[in-house]
Amino acid sequence: MLWNQVEQEVILGWDFYGPVIMFVVLIALAVPVWAAIGASSILMLVWSGALPLSLVGERLFSGIDAFALTAVPLFILTGDALVRTGLSRKFLDVAEALTKFAKGGFGSATVLVCGMFAAISGSDAAGAAAVGRMTIDRLVESGYPRPYACALVAAGACTGILIPPSIAYIIIGLVLGISASTLFLAAVIPGLAILVSILATNIIMNRLYGWEGGGNIAMGEYFARLWKSLKSGWYAFIVPGVIFYGIFSGRLTPTEAGATAVVVTIIMGFILGTLKLSDFPAMFVSSAKVNGVILPIIAFSVPLAEALAIIGVPQGFVAVATGISDEPWVLILMMVGILIAAGCVMETTPNIVILAPILKPLADDIGMNEIQFCVMMITALGVGFITPPLGLNLFVVSGITGESILKIAVWAVPFVIFMLIVTLLIAFVPAISTSLLPEIFR
Image (tube, rainbow, N blue to C red; front, side, top):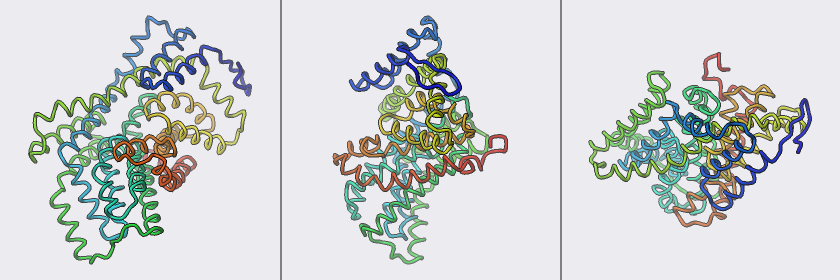
């Protein structure tokens, strides 16, 4: 079976196609993604002889034996603690006060609080669920149609993996051997650009349909409300402040910043009286369930990547892609399309594990900076989370509201268009993702 022949012949047999078919069948049967990837990886390793079966256990352990990976459960736990302590509601109060002057203010506040939550939890699904429960009913009361309110929260929650610190950037850094701190710095401008695009979409939609009134507030009253909200909720911003200062000043690694954020959030919960010792078992179980899905996928990424490399899949993909066109802009559009489609049907972690080692050689072939490639990949996957009709965030908000997924998908289209524009800018303009980096990374 021949992929193509450009500079070299790459032949793929059943040692590749068999495991791929097995993976698709297992996913169709609703087998958990980590189990499907694990079974397919082991089959590929055994069938291809890429790695002796006796060494698989050792390689699985080495896949998660990384200090940087400790940051993942810590950020997950921080996000859970943030909700249980009630600090996330303080973010909403401040965001609402900030946007009170504008028409469509509460819609914009919802997007801002999604970004604030993203700067702590690093997870899109957690953000969609937490912010959705706080805001969707109030958005409807403000005049928004319920399906649009759901689409707005789903779009805002995409920033969970786009605004650092992000679990997705930790994982792609681990898979490709790139510093998570460097990726966090590179993701600041792109993440904020996506947030602004969602805000702009909501403002335009609100202007077109006139859903939410407001905006007629005296300047003195506006600053009085803003001061009141900051005075009553300023302490909530200690948590993201610790994370950002620690990481970007170089004083803390992402793992240390995550640990510090957990401790600070828990202490604040005790001081406020919103967190009790009896809350800890449920909090730990909730976080462990999320982490228990992510870590097995990462564990299988190392032997899977080795098997794919030995079989020649990355080289084969480059051959196929460059056989279709050797124009860099065509190949970039092809990668963006693949990533958005993948983001529709699977979570970030398996997409990174499977696609990053395959697409990275193509990005290298066209001369794309590896940092820019990582940012483009995570951003495109984020767009996939709300791309109709299969975007994962659409299902999350549908699940917590009972609203029809198709109705939500229709209102998600404008957000997808604006976010796609930003994604293409990131893909074609390296400076967007590299301008904050030291010269050595550009």
